[in-house]
Length: 343
Image (cartoon, rainbow, N blue to C red; front, side):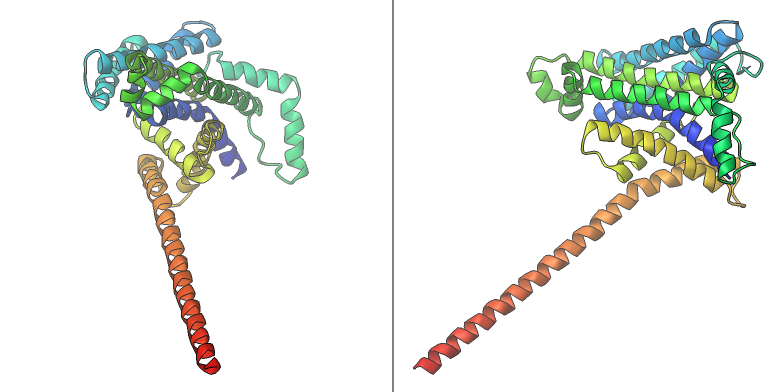
């Protein structure tokens, strides 16, 4: 059980980078960008192709990030320069990327099992430095002797990387360009009246969003040991689920809190899926169904809670008004009685 939870936490912290990208497009820009399903695979395809060819995994991962930025920027150009609907722009780019990804890979699947990736090197460092043995000894101390993960290094490394991206996102959204980007998502007409180039801001925002998505795709390919042309199907739903769950549980009062909520939502989503798949009648093929149910619940439950809370508040105010009316009537009756007794 602990091993499954550990694995889902590790995957969740990697997918959190993708969820941050979805947050930028859907929440900041208010742009339903379906490019995500394609750019995620683009990141995986480029990194896997370079690594399988003997290239440096760090260079491969950064190349994936740049390719994701280009893909997102092209979606923005299609929308702004071509005057095409935002949803349709994302769909067109997603379809285009499918063929591009096949061209990059040369085939539908690239295995990475016997190659050096970022994670194999991190695992070696973690084992040689004694981090794994130290943390496993802590598990032994609390009775989890049969629950040792393969390595702790990947989890610790990804926590650091994900929080670096979180802090960079927080910082960027507070800069002048970031504030203009947020204003573009809130009210394009208003920010355009202040002489801001909203078209350029949309292209930039979508580029950054898909750069994070492609970066996450590259890491997932290296973690799983393969890149597949169909691995991006439903990524936009997973990203949305992470954003919605995080916002519903942790709140959205500030940018820093919201980005932290997105990371938390990604981890919680992975934990819920892992626990759900342990139910006897559910199978791995039901993951998309589980995802859809999670998103539906995440969207509807907050509204149900808010509605219930509003009803309670209204009932309390109504009871208070009745009580005030009764007290007022009682005081008038006492005053009237006092006047009669005086006369």
